[in-house]
Image 1 (cartoon, helix red, strand yellow):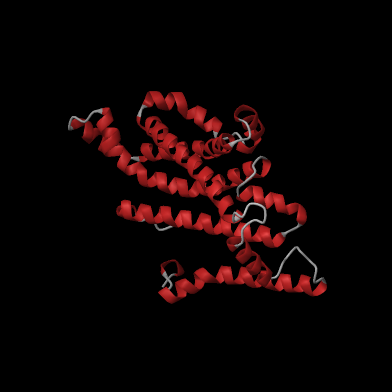
Image 2: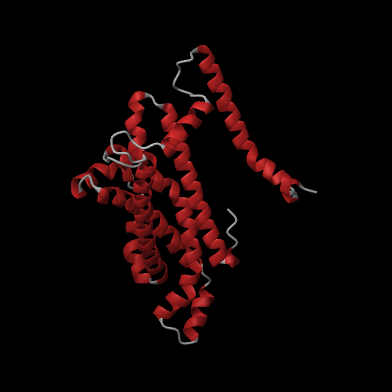
Length: 270
């Protein structure tokens, strides 16, 4: 049997999925042990037990000044900004991608503009956003929108263009209007792609969020990481990084589950 046709059994699949994580954790433990053996005061690679103790403290103990548990407070602020940014981007992209892919006049008008816009480095616009929108919540949300919307629009418009033209012709033959074709023929086929595109753009959305919070914020996961970096508090930084990774994984898993249940024919396997 060719290697391309071989599929791992369920136990082997679980083992293979866990192997990279185990190897990475082992490499960190070994590296931390080597550094701490040479210098017990080393802060670059804290011991896993130190990270565990720090995580327990951050998740359970309140701030001495305010009494609030800062990690949960930061998490709520960051997720609110992320949710607003991604939600607005998804809505704009769905409408615009549908128009560009379905209407030739809209495609001629906006296609090249969106392509050029997608080439602009969003982080380079951050100072401009702070000047225009101030240092509050709006600039952070707008950065996420600017950062991921062009990608989503291009992806969705291409998905519309990939729909077999015969389906559009058959719908017109049956008397369907442009609005009916958009809502009954095209929209059901691009909604699964919208979820997949949002999943792919989440990494960039987190990047823009952390960058904005690091520059101008008084709360948020990115703000806290850059606040403690001056003290070389790697145990806190690593705890926040692990927590952000866990949140990103849970959001991705939730979107994949939503896609599987809402659109089972698509087979969201990634």
